Length: 419
Image 1 (cartoon, rainbow, N blue to C red):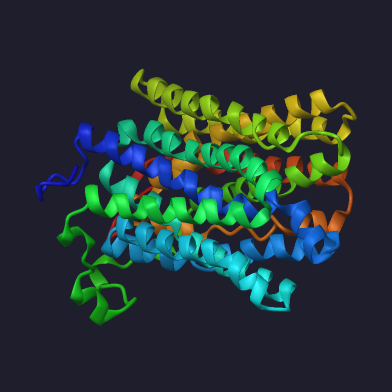
Image 2: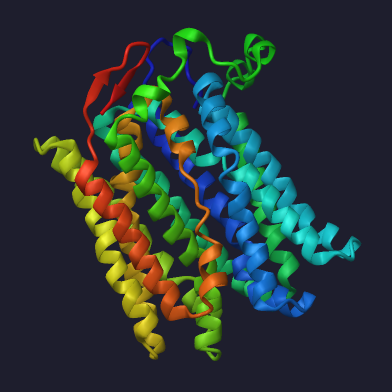
């Protein structure tokens, strides 16, 4: 379904449905590629004879790369269109995922290569969500934005579920290499279908005037950074998103290893699938509930904060319980509840980024970093302390957002910014 070139900035309902489905699938494949290494953690450590500290370096290297391209990714998306940046990055990380097993067998410096590969993967995937935020803020109406974003956000659960189920089976049947091939080839197929069926040749072309001026920002579209960073709601968004991203990626990266070490007789397809299976309906429900409450006349910021209380506050309670239990069944329940309830953040802080500044949503999203994600397990060495820290970081972000978060548009001079 290609756009007809009209001047309407927002997608029509049929266009929005198709794009939502394709972006959901793209987010799914983003997480398929992202989670390949955590899923293969034990196999890779055994194959290359890595200890936990060495594997922690491999895992954390993704997040060090991930934060570096978010600002530039969001800026470019605001200038040339988020869909172009999404497809370029997906093409690159798809090829990298396919080539990783092949190149690993060629080199002898396995730790250095895998660390560099994951760092590069982080660089490539770092532009995805800033581009998505930019694209949705410009093409989706505010009244439909929370449900659309939360629906697309379920791709993270679908992707983790897909690679957790199919990847665990492929890992047992054909080895860790097959997991990388599976994820990378599906990503490249998605890029091909999106380019062929959703975008015209004109929409795929990057304007020459943008290429000639490079990354410079025209005076009339420059973002008023001084005004923005003097506003408490902006810092509330940054701190809250930093907290939620850090804790989510910590659970995403280390839950497979936690279950494998704590419950060595458990099946990978169980603990790699069930929490993310629960997260899909909770994410969809949070988006539906948020849009419904706003349509009933409740203040937007009130609903965003309510969703964040569930996503950061209630989910942290179950994370604390996860660190204390010695029962596999209870651990599955606590992990499922914690991961599932975290999806309420899609209708809380994640959408609030777009509420604050649709014209530069990608840039605001890009300020957020996830430095804490790979660092937690390396510094604590205890699963209990890791889950305690997850809860503590979530609490800091939640309290900041509850105290200072806003969603009201004001004029800063050169652009409109919601504060």
